[in-house]
Length: 471
Ligand code: GLU
Image (cartoon, rainbow, N blue to C red; front, side, top):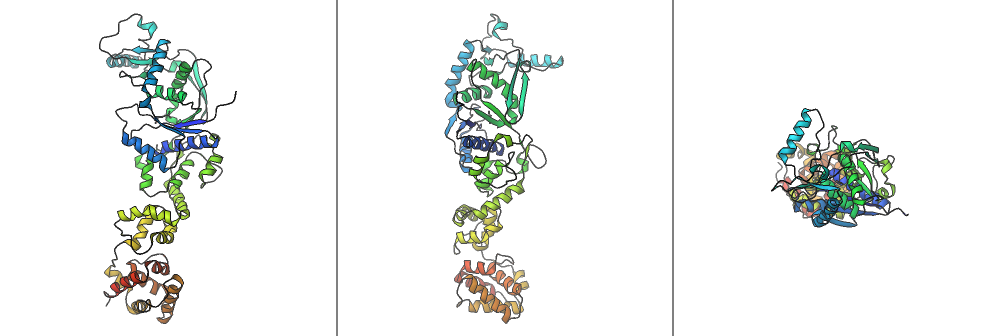
């Protein structure tokens, strides 16, 4: 028999943002499928009707598309599959593998309290199993839940692709509720029906689901019967914050789209997520193609991954340097507007080209670009400090001669050097006052480059305006 080709899935619940941990799982599922020439599927697990929202579905789609995690099938939605779940439930009931349980909340609470008082582990006692219900009439007006009749004997075991062999005794598991009173299936049931129908071969997910897996394996066996082929399971260790606690909002952004807002490039976040709990030698920066080529589960760490913002900022800075000036300009435009900047005069792509090496995020780049697009204001204290004596004379001379110099870096640099010589000053004694007069700042990138970008007219207008305020 040929082995079925690899099929993985990500199955987020649309109850809020797409968490970094889910994005990391999606990325591993995507990379694993791509590495094996298989398929990657997106399924929206929206059976929790109270908590699921359309907005959250959209956030999932946006986040997947932002990270360019393209899926081959889906998005499937569990709410479109309710009749399929009912069909499987009816069959299990008919086969005696599931049954209606009419126990009320109060009854179950009393059962639980009794078990606790006796020092036993609380568990459902099987009172509505067909063999125990023995002709009892169901109470009137109660909508039963459906429970799966878990095997009593034996154990469930699987060889986890990340954690290694795991064994759980069936005596540890009680009869799971697979559909609520309103007929809506529970997660553990719907996930199994879906993974069977979608022919998933590798279930990779967060290790918060390890405890669900033995229950799900029993459900697979019941639904598929003897000889049914189960997927393989791999549970990914969680992501911890720098303080060793589970990653959460207090560690900063945990939603994928927040990274977009904070000025990260998707390829940097993608690369960073790939390194969260997986490694290939000591490679930190690599392309999607390399990830696909290298990805394997053998190098998924068993220990939790640690989130490190500095490393992400570093990676982002590296990807910013590689990004084209036009792309950066497009990405930074709305951010400059948000800061109140007016994009006019110096061409934004050229500004990005000049500034991108110093910015670790698009937001930082936008802040730096305000040098060109922010209002021209010069603090009187800076005027007093920098525009006096021979420095002021040199700036005046610059303004006079600027009309005839070639407006490009080398010639502008030549003119500044000439003034340094003529006025017997040091370079900073001309360059800093020029910066102040032009931009109101004492520090900018290379002054000749800044002058070139402002252009002759804007430069002269700004410098004259400042000089008019000098004594
Ligand atoms: N909806 C589940 C979650 O978001 C999916 C878990 C699974 O992959 O089976 O945690």
